[in-house]
Each structure stands twice: as C-alpha cells, then as structure tokens.
Image 1 (cartoon, rainbow, N blue to C red):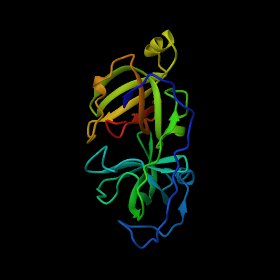
Image 2 (image 1 turned 90 degrees about the vertical axis):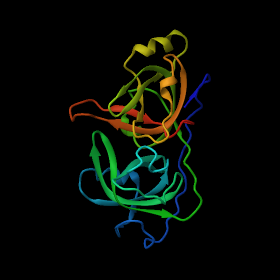
Image 3 (image 1 turned 180 degrees about the vertical axis):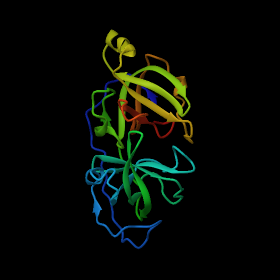
Image 4 (image 1 turned 180 degrees about the horizontal axis):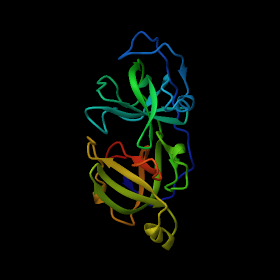
Length: 238
C-alpha cells in the first residue's frame, strides 16, 4: 500500500499461462473430472458438483489465515477464492496449480472449498494486478477473486471484531476528492486480524491518495444485506 500522487494508467491484463501436469502427482484427493474455466466453475455455485480448475496463486495461501488455506486462483482475467481448513505447505504465491472442490457461497463470498490442490512443477510467476475503480457501482462479481490495483482517496477507517477496515473513495480532482470522503461510493480495504503480514493501514490519514493492490472480496453479513465490495492487500508492499 503506497501513497500516490499521479493518475492510474489504463487497464492491463493480469492473466498468466498455466501448465497442466499429469493428475497422479496430487496433494489431497483429486477428481477425474476435466479442468474447466473459472467462469464455468462459478456457474456451479451451491449445486454440490465437484469441479477442477487451473490457474496461478495470487498470494501465499496462508497469508490471510495461518492455520487454513485462503487464497485466490487467477486464470485468464478471472479469479476464484480457494478455501480449506488445513494447510498446504508446498504451495506458494505464483505457483501453477490444479484445484478440486465444490463452489459455494459463504457470507457473500463465492469460494471453492478444496478437496485437493496439486502444484504443477515449473517457474513461479505471480500474476500482475489489473486496474479497477474505487467505487461501489462496479458489480462486485466483476472484482471478486481478482488481483487488482485500485487508486482512490482514503476516508473513514476503524476496527471490528474481525479486523481493520478503511474506506477508499473514487479519485476526483480538487474539492471533489475531499467531498468524496463523506459519500457512500467506496470500496473497503480489509485487513483480517489473522493476517500474518498485515499492511499498517492505521497510519493512513483521511484525504491521502492511495494506490492499493489486493484481491477483490465480497462480504454480506446477512442474506438480505447489500454486498460490500472489499479489497484484501497481501502484504505491506501492497
């Protein structure tokens, strides 16, 4: 996370090529189902169907919570959160992997609950973030699970039971930027209390112009609540 003074460049793709290895070198159970795109995997949400997807890990899988796996898989401009209640010590940021599991919704977040994760041998390449606006108008599904770079004006911040949050408002020139601090149009920078390399967002001041990299998230406390667009930085450098 960095204070910035210049405008954002145009969008750029963050996709990386994915190598696929034979299925027998698995960590955890693997299905014999064919590998599908993230878009096709998302279409199975809450169906109970087992799917296999391939891509690159956008962060170390235990960065947000040390005792479980919680990380995003990037594939061709799409992203999907992965979750497992155990550790996968061989996986690292930038690894090409094949993930098997069931897609479900948990408090607004669409995630693949892992049955198995296989690391494909090869060079680690962390995907590049794509530029995205700091607004609430962009559909959350377009940002969820993707590694993004967002530039905006810091607003209100605080602490909840689960972690620390900071509102990031769309960047506008002059007084419009200051006025935006009191508006509802924003994305929430979210740093879980369990984060093992938490960015020090408590030092950010209202009105600072920020350039933030992180993974797009969604939070919905209750089914009838509006979803909250989030951005989860991976480390202080974000």
